[in-house]
Image (cartoon, rainbow over all chains, first blue to last red):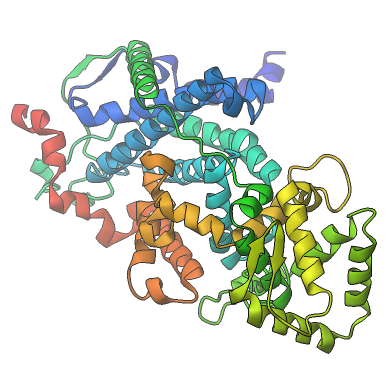
Length: 207
Length: 315
């Protein structure tokens, strides 16, 4: 019986997950003393603003894509969405450059770096489809200009920026799903590997 | 890790120092609260822009001559859409990246025939206008060379086009049914009927696809003029700008930067070239950890000493 349980996929997955990421590592109550700089704030600020982007997006989705044009409340929620996005990118770019100058890929953290970069690129695409879905002059101009760039690569055949329905679906379903998954993987990798230690002067690494 | 095999840009030293208390849940909660307050503050203070969309109706009423000129440009093949190529039609070669004609690789997948879709089909949907029906019959019954002669004569005269009492006029002869057709199309546009004809022209009530009306409006001189007033043109770094001086997509600064400098600023293939440059830079950014020269930059520029200054002071 116990052998049967031990060989279950579920048991194996749980053991593997808790072995790699035990609770005290997933939700730590201490951290290395070198994690003491303002630059670390921008990682958590990126996640916090991402939460705000999703919450404000949820509210906009409740009443549909045209609501914010005809309602002062809707317009205000759109403002919350816009400024959340601006803070998201501001935080994310500083986080990215901070991690670059810390060489945060060291010590087996290459995948942490790569998932971060891909999340950044996916966020750009998500923001673009949002601008394309505004249903106002801005979205008209942005899409009619962007079509040339996308058509020049051949991608315009299946990614038609002039198709509002397609852009809206990408913006509120497909790309957010990818962004959330990538962010989750990125955060889990950070917890798995921990925060990269400083260069060690004694080994000559900092010379 | 032995010191001998230690690669400073790949390996991390083992940390044996002090650990400080850290409340990750409290930190996350405070971060969300602070960002929420900041977002609220910015939203109350600045709001967000919302310039109304341009309709074919608003365009044709604001500038009927520009509308009529654009319509004849669709017919003479000189408009952007009429000479575009893939994915809309085969009237242009599209852009190429050296020998790679990427724009053509999937062919015509979103067919747009400007003469048929923007002019003839909408006019054919007008009911109870025998003169218009006769004009369309005359057009369809004419040979291609005859049609070309009419369009050329009309196009040559369109700099002298006038709009008075709701009528578009051009001082031209041997133009066949074109004056009637262009005038009716302008009237249709000014009434708003052309918006609907372009949106639901292929049948069906519901749609979310605005490809055809957007292409038609984008062929105008009207839309770029509005965009220029909002500093949104490519030459104005418009890709990262937003209407009414809002921050916009500032993160696209590097993408739009390339359009401002040679050779891209004067290249007929700028879109695909800039895309290729950005793809290359994105891949380089992704692969920084495995590219020897690049991954050594942080260690050499030593900005990390500023970031971890407390650690180095205490160690």
